[in-house]
Image 1: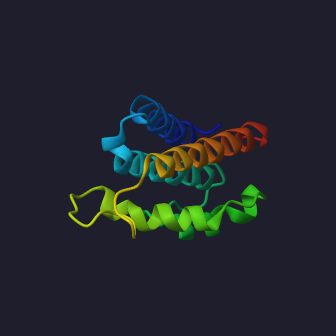
Image 2: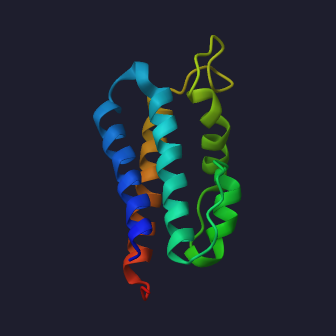
Length: 134
């Protein structure tokens, strides 16, 4: 595995670890959303790095997923990617109105984001562990 690929995955792992520490705190569901997004973004960028595809300085999960979809050969829940994408900007700033149509992400939302991020992380680590590395 290339050095920078591993660095992207280490950083994604830190996001997973952070979520694990805060997942039960109902006041931090927006932070779980942020770190879930970050984890998935970094996983996609690890794939791009490994396959020597220019890694764009963007945060859009849909665009990044489209860049790696042919390599991954797995289908990911685009609705979940879209939801995290929409929450990404709002999760970084205070909001009186909340981040979702019904307000701040619920504990259930946070748990779903966490499970989705862990699944993406696991699948990409597995994929990158099986490729012929340069």
